[in-house]
Length: 157
Image 1 (cartoon, rainbow, N blue to C red):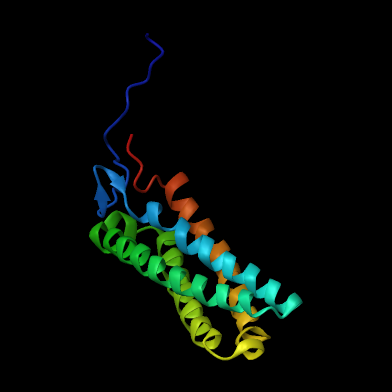
Image 2: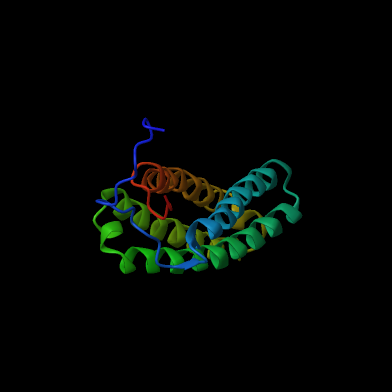
């Protein structure tokens, strides 16, 4: 038992402000908009290759659901960001929040584009916006990963 190193309390992990029973809310919500926006890209690709209207409809619904869930995730993320100065002091947090605002703006614009009729709702603008949304999410996800696994944001020790 002598080789057990006691945990030090000198530096506490940055805690999540928006949480339920010590579980951060933001990471519980982010998989939903990610799945919806990736799904929108996939259904846009399916529409582009088949011209079946069903795929364009799926894209529009996925964008709407992604925006709703993304707004909820953003609210929880903003509460964490503005509720803890330790989180605001992290460089990846700033990239993460800025990138996610860009993701939501791209998706919102994409939802407006998808409200048009058939082919013009997807090809080429909707497809490009869906792809850009997913690419930006790759970067913001990387920064979110960095905050949890490198800086231990919201991690209870």
